[in-house]
Amino acid sequence: MPFTVNRSDGMTKDAEFEAYARILRQQGVDLGRMPRVPEPGTGRRWLYVWDARANAQAFADELKRRTRDNSWVVVEVDTPASVGPMGPIIVQVGRRANGLVFGLHPLSRVMIQSAFPGANGTATTVSINFETLHDFQATHGGIEVVAREIVPTLTGLSMQQLGELGYALIEDDTDRTLVLVPPGDLVQV
Image (cartoon, rainbow, N blue to C red; front, side, top):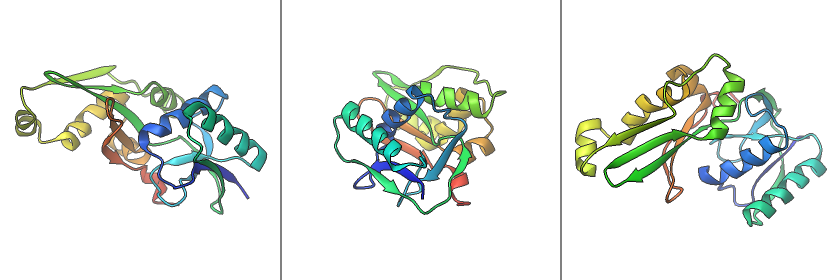
């Protein structure tokens, strides 16, 4: 049976997932092509899968140490592993006095470069200026609409590729998920 690492309550926030991906990357895992299983219970994201419980436990221990959160546990999964990119893509959203700034998280950029070598975003950050939130909504139609325009610009991926990978817009100050499009290839599992 394969093993993965998840929070004991099954409620991994998108912002917490960044630490998970960072440690995997530091351990030499190719985030664009890795053995993976759907997150047990949620189907929100792909998680790395280990063949040996001891290796998964070592990762969980490291995750606990670095995040100072003891709720990370090893979970035995009965779903067969597939190979593919870790998803969803993370886009960081910063609030500014006069608007919003969007940037592709560096780990997501690395994952995209591995999974889609020809993809090349046309911007590293995108800023949208507005006077009030009402002004923003009237002009742009809301954060979900803006995301469909900005995420392809940052990633260089088509909407079909983004639908397969999924994406999450996470507010920097609060770690709140503003938009989540789960990986579409999870539906096939």
